Image (cartoon, rainbow, N blue to C red; front, side, top):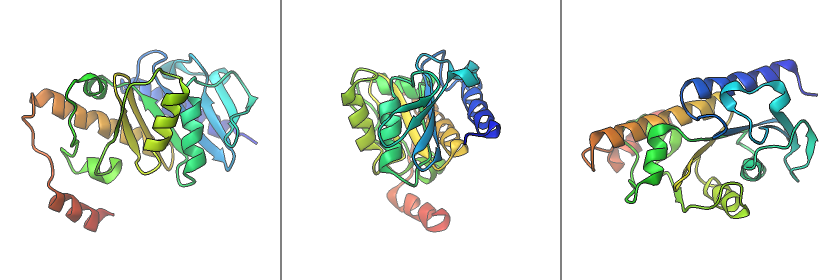
Length: 209
């Protein structure tokens, strides 16, 4: 049974992401595992900054079957794929924030995003990049699902970003730190920025896990 509190928590997270400029209009989508085989997914074409209860789809994770509500986002295949593959992941957020999306469109993308301690701690030492695939395509769903098997964040070339985490607050935080790192990289100019060394990252993991 889905509670009003769960619906409101989902809506609040979507609105908060919109207020922080993580996406414009219908450019983002969100999913949240509420039971082992049940997830809330934003409906296709819905605007996260303005989403309402009627824009939320209830889907079975194991086979993608719609149990209630509208047709889910065209990106629901990778949302449900990630939730299927990783039992420790309960939320997935796809967004297109200004600086991170700028990075995704660069010819020469950075290979190291570890400009502050928050990046390796919350996003991971490496952020993989997947080549451009048409939004909503099986190829994109496969690429994102595979990339997030061993990572919590991925950059989609000429498209956007996806993060996954243990809950809604976790993916919101990861998205914000992803955008922060990319803003530092873009604003610093071509390669004119420092990143943490391997030794510094190892030390962070030693103290913070």
